[in-house]
Length: 328
Image 1: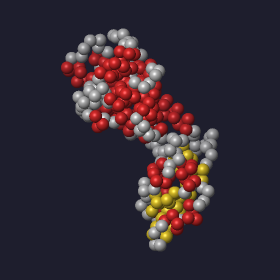
Image 2: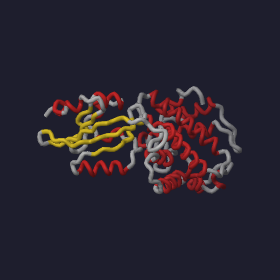
Image 3: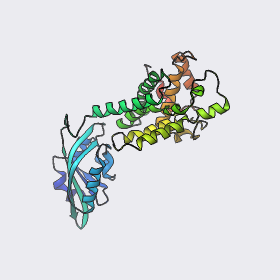
Image 4: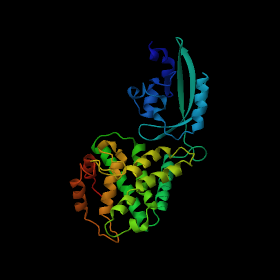
């Protein structure tokens, strides 16, 4: 059965159209869908219909839709999806079940909505600024013991943003804008677990004892637990995708490429990319910053340290990307 020929009247519409089978796997989209979303048919067809979800549409919207479609009834609602460019796409959609040669299909027709200055919709810029502000306040609040920590955290976030974009470009990874923003914003949380470490250990000017080192190495687990407790209380979805990235950064940014890090002794690509990125940034920022107990290293010396410890401490591909950054 040639689905596109049978669905031709729908696919010729000027509005974006998506057609799925009874299991909600995409079988066809029209030219308008490609033009609006930026995704080609070859990418969309064969995937689940939610492939362009932004996680900003309320859960109750999906629940209402699933209930209607399970009963083979038409459904209309409003979605906030994300285009390939990273831009949000606010649209109404009407989904209609149809039978073609006794086979069930769902035809979804989108109508683009203008974003409103007030009411149900907020701009992408407002969402991103809110996300960034919440994460900053959380990070600084958890590390308030150190009056200089705010500058360190902001520097880590700014440098992480530069590195994740440089890494994506240098290695042609085609990472999504949403993911890269989440890595940058979430990096500020990397050491929130230090809030649970005694100050006598945290700010000890000399070497730590074996016992003190073991206590210090619990801070990723403490930070992970802090974030879990906070996110379990939140009902909103708009930050939810950031949380997994933040969890990985908090838990794994002290893992080492050769498997000798902590807390899980992960090795190589077992370490999530976001944690490998922050591992490089965190060490570089610490080396090049002044502290009451140390002087700042020159940038060239710190860069040489990263190079010397690639393949052991650091992902060599991430170090290579870091070296392409021109302004620190």
